[in-house]
Length: 124
Image 1 (cartoon, rainbow, N blue to C red):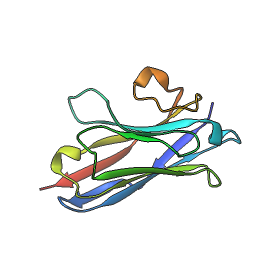
Image 2 (tube, one colour):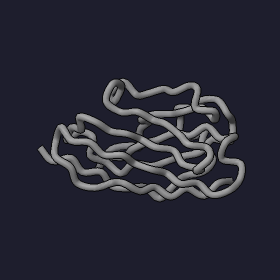
Image 3 (cartoon, rainbow, N blue to C red):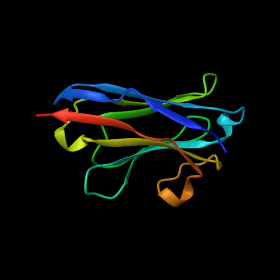
Image 4 (cartoon, rainbow, N blue to C red):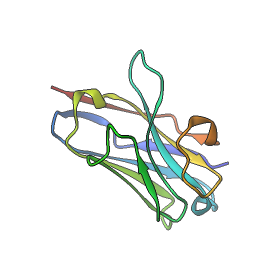
């Protein structure tokens, strides 16, 4: 398993941008597909975006497509989530997750390791 630590969350006004980072430990990061999930207060955790182990394939939830971009730097053991045109409904705790399979996954059960989460708050 890899250990994951998210950073980059904060408070931003609607229409603004944030970039989340997720740093992974271990030498096998490049073998893992990665994903971002989020959980808003009173709601279940939901899929946001995923990227294959080599970065060649990405997939997004409909609600964020065109506004969010997932990317990774395997040399730095880091995955990113660039969030643009943020909306109040994007307010949530954002979690990074790792799947030891190299292909994209979108369901929680496919992921083996999780970070502790970072809070994103979007004010109207």
